[in-house]
Length: 112
Length: 116
Image (cartoon, rainbow over all chains, first blue to last red; front, side, top):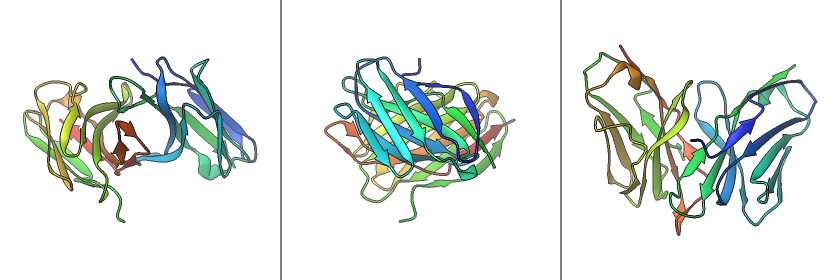
């Protein structure tokens, strides 16, 4: 089963609004990463947060991590039409299989 | 840097034919990953290599799939014989990994495979 599950599956907002996407996972992790995928393209890495970090910023992106709840959120502030894409969280477990496990993604549509 | 290079970008083949997908990772990266993406199953890890050695191939669907990494700059994913249910977009990604910790992955543009 998927390690990370994003919520919501789809999100439609107006340009300028903030977009928040959530990710839940099941097992202990070493790090959690967020990726963006534009239609027909490969995934692009956005941000990595380690298990001992609680919050991280990168430009208009803000990621939080709550290991007690096994959840993370990605906030995109002042969204733009160019932010329209699918967003995936990916987790790396701290034992056993060390490859990233991707969630099913959130499709974000930003209306101009 | 040219990024991760995959070829071909599109492949249409008939059921039963052999298909070979190719990947050139980013120079200096020591880990390489093959993924498959479909609408139904999302993004699935098929296999990953560390320092050219297969570490985890538990995601390879069945014996029809095989992957090799003969050197640090080249990998192949082969499907023989191909079936319609293999139709998907296949991505290759590379990254730096140390002490089993995988950092950000860089994805290629993908190969869209259609098996008729």
